[in-house]
Structure formats: C-alpha cells, structure tokens
Length: 110
Image (cartoon, rainbow, N blue to C red; front, top):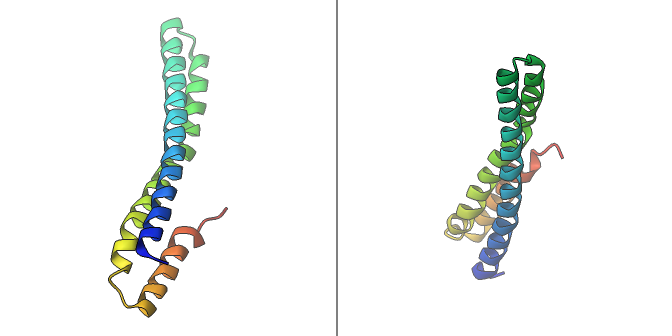
C-alpha cells in the first residue's frame, strides 16, 4: 500500500471524527445553555428548585467532553503517525503501527 493511500484513509477518518466532534460540541453547548437558563430562572423567581435541572445538565456534560478529548487525541496520533512511520524500516514500521492501533483502540471499553 502506497503512502498516498494511507494518507487518504487517514484524511477520511479525520473527516468522520470532525463530524462527530462537531455534533458533540453542539450537544454540549445545548446542555450548557439549558443549565444556565435554569439557573437564571431559579435566581429571578427565587424558586431554587429550578436549579436542579442545572445540576443535572452540568453532570451530563462529562460524557461529551470526555469523548471530544478522546477524539482529539486520536486525531493527533492519526495525523502524525504516517509521516513518522514512513521514515522507519519496514519491520519496525509494522511494529509501530501495531502499537499505534493498540494504543488508539485496544484500551477502549466499547
């Protein structure tokens, strides 16, 4: 497989990851705005029960932020790996690719 084909595949993965990242950022923003809105309503109406949804939405922000962080780490690894690995001898390059795949996907609990 030529380096151009590898780079095309990496670029395709980046596009897919970027779409997922944007969706997670939009969802995170919506949750944040809902939480702020409920908090402001609680302050204005002096009914502090309205602050409960704010606590819930803030708690729900943990998952999208964790996913965005993971996607960005994977994108960095995928962007730099082909250039670095192409400089190695074939046997060592194969070993490094296996390590990269294990580091990116071997530790996922999914």
